[in-house]
Picture 1 (cartoon, helix red, strand yellow):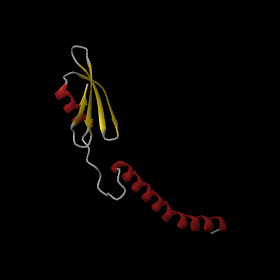
Picture 2 (cartoon, rainbow, N blue to C red):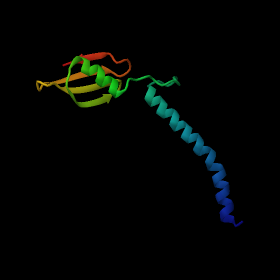
Picture 3 (cartoon, helix red, strand yellow):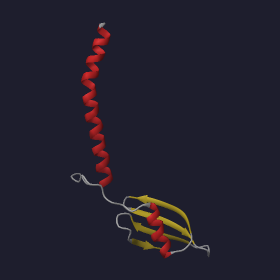
Picture 4 (tube, rainbow, N blue to C red):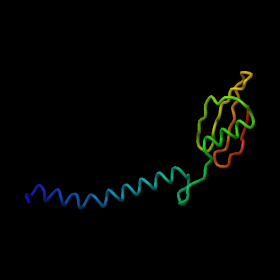
Length: 101
């Protein structure tokens, strides 16, 4: 085995465990970002977009124009059959209606 291969094997042996530690650290950061807490290991339960739409359509019947999530809030725009656009804010954690207009 020439010197180049030996160096490559040594470097791979040294780098591989560190790469796993870095990847594990990135995974923890992703979980932290998702849950919003540093010490929590269990993710925060959120309702789905479809559930949020169902809740919004219980207040205003019509076609969904848009749904956006910012933080723990879904913002849903619904076009009624009369042509009125309604905006409903839904709490993404528990499905409660924050506001309608």
